Image 1 (cartoon, rainbow, N blue to C red):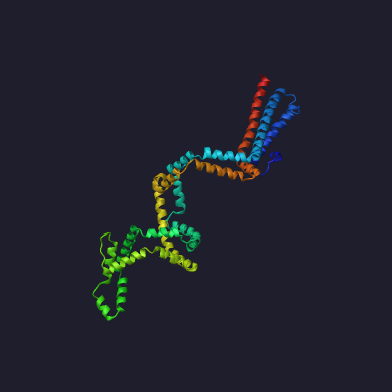
Image 2: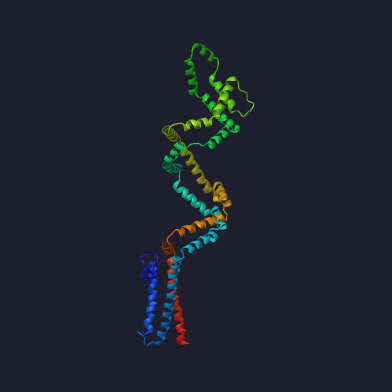
Length: 385
């Protein structure tokens, strides 16, 4: 900003105060000239002396402050790189040092007002489970296409395949899968639909097979096998047929890598069709589960009074606090300096001026008024004492 712009104010956020400070300066200077050269109050020497001293003080004070403010922003423009470095250093060492950051995190955790504000924010968007579901549905609608494309085009690496193989060979995982399959077999064997299926299957066999199978209860046999799978007894014995089924389950459980390889061999179109169908079937169930989760935890936050009493947030903040050190503050300060340095010096000055100039225009106004008041008092003392 040039000296001309200082005298003829541009349309800026501080324009009104700038005009007022300039008007005060011109008033003080003009009045001083009129009094000094005898254009007014020729016959009132005492009043003239007092006012002359006051306007002189106001003009000198206002002019000095006016020049100081202009020179300050002019210097900022000329030494913008140095100013940017100093601001970054100030932020890193004082405003956002590691102790300040940790203290702020603790204040957030211990503030009842913060907890209440977060609850109100959540309640605005997730006031009921239905509204929470709608928000999640909208969010998922924006992400679904990208998620499907990522899944369809993802290729497992050799390292990932090795990790999956190791997981499928873990005895705990295998036993857990068997327990789940056993429970499913028991429930299926008890359903009438399964019994009708077995009857229909046997009705299609020859007479000899019918006679032989009529002597056994297939649903009960299937159920017994399921109960053995679900049993936590490690010494559970399987008969010959059950042992065959057990080994078959082991083989299927250990074949996760084969499933993945088969999946990766499918065409993009087939995989896209399959993923779309799967997501379509699971979408509503997932929305139901996550909406319940949000409502439950929203109410937990309300009951916790402060976020420190809400375990997920507390543990997250404590995790962050343990990793806050001087490097974090330095990084923030450096990034701020780099961002400021990336601006053109004139833009840097303008941006800073628009944010702070109102305060400095007050200094100009106060300088003129204070100078007048001090000069007036000194003139009064000089006239009468």
